[in-house]
Image (cartoon, rainbow, N blue to C red; front, side):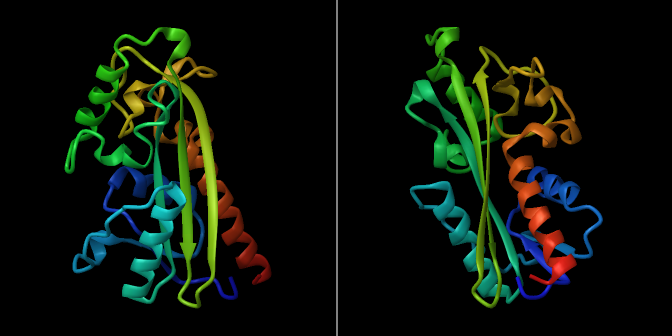
Length: 205
């Protein structure tokens, strides 16, 4: 990064994700925009086979359409007993346009006969930063947990109500976004990204 951008687009319509990004980047001298500010950008088909492929595809497309530095994320839940599913299909696991609840209830249904000892899972988050000059960076975080037998908690979004985080003894839907960001997959990736931006600000790398 040769110059710190004054504006950056977070390539998402998901308000939960946007909130987490803003909290991680608080204090940085960058105006953060989202796809809600650019309603004419067509929907980007996430047909990659990996989280990295999808994140890069989104970031490249939005950067090209706007001419602005773009941060895109692809993240999801990988359940060991389901051979890594939902994986890259996490956002649409129960079908295109499915709600968060429909998605996590499909996982619970598929896991109904799986014993506690085999309910391990992990979240993955990949952030792709693409600049108009063609520079690209990848930041990745993960978080280990297990799948509950039923949804617990009413905070968060996505699969948070069924993801039990052992060290805290709660699901991600039982803690606020500030506490979650300390340990979550997205929080880890965002801290790497924020550190990179701060280094760029301080040293103009």
